[in-house]
Length: 89
Image (cartoon, rainbow, N blue to C red; front, side, top):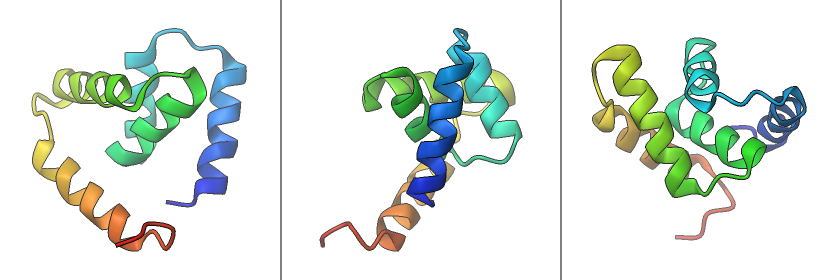
């Protein structure tokens, strides 16, 4: 995840003033954002706690696909942490 790119996208989302966060979440996922990226963008763009953003994205994902995607989410989380040079081990 390129944080600079994600932060720029978060600013654009915030400026767009979209209010239906589940729709925003679904749109981001359909455009190819991972669950981690979608959670991060919702958190940054709409000043939502990370926990609330995760719940919102997971709920929207379950409605969109019929699956919670928890297995994929946890693998993506582990991959993102391992790939981030700013994370201390």
